Amino acid sequence: MKTDEFINTLTSDLRPQRSLHWVLLCGLLCGALLAALAFAVFLGFRSDILSALTSIRFLFKFVVTLTLAITGTYATLSLARPDSAGNHRSWSLLITPVILVGAVAVELMVLPSRSWEDNLVGHNATHCLTVIPLLSAGPLLCIFAALRRGAPSEPGLTGAVAGLAASGIGATFYAANCTDDSPLFVVAWYPLAVLIVAGVAYFIGARALRW
Image (tube, rainbow, N blue to C red; front, side, top):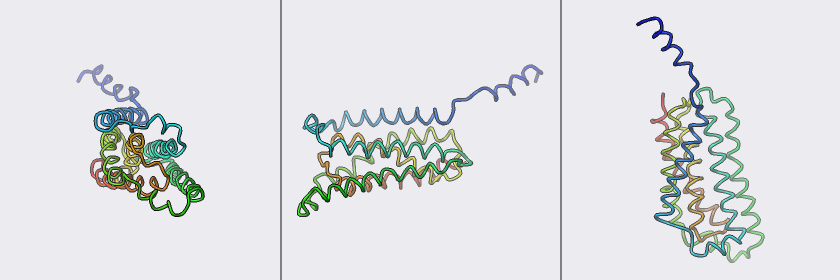
């Protein structure tokens, strides 16, 4: 190899690469677009969407799901690196449960006890447990593709947290279709759907993100 070719080979490795943060955010955007497409084709907004927009309970669902998507992404960025520096970011994942528990406490104080069970069971439990994982599949696939650029020291855990971020996106779209708005329904079924996604993502991540 000639000297100038050798120098070019060495310096090519020094050229700035797109950061993992940028790649992951692009993956999230692509995943959100896939979820939006699936939502538009197979679900769509609930029929009373205009009146629902005036309901605090309906809007609160998006506070929960978007918080999960954001904190899940924040924690995933930390875990994607081999040193896992800044793992304290994982504490941000507690924000969503705290918000949800607070809302449930308020709901229990506002609603008469005879209506608690009906609001907890709701009308769309099976739909929720099915649709949220399906809407999360596209975002999860895109996040994993981005994470291949990283080197997580705990691939299974990283995959599970990525599943939380993906399910936050999927649940956000599902919330626009779901007609059960009570925090009691949300606390009973949304987390279960999220855990399904996170559990599958854990096993995928343990294999696909290993290095």
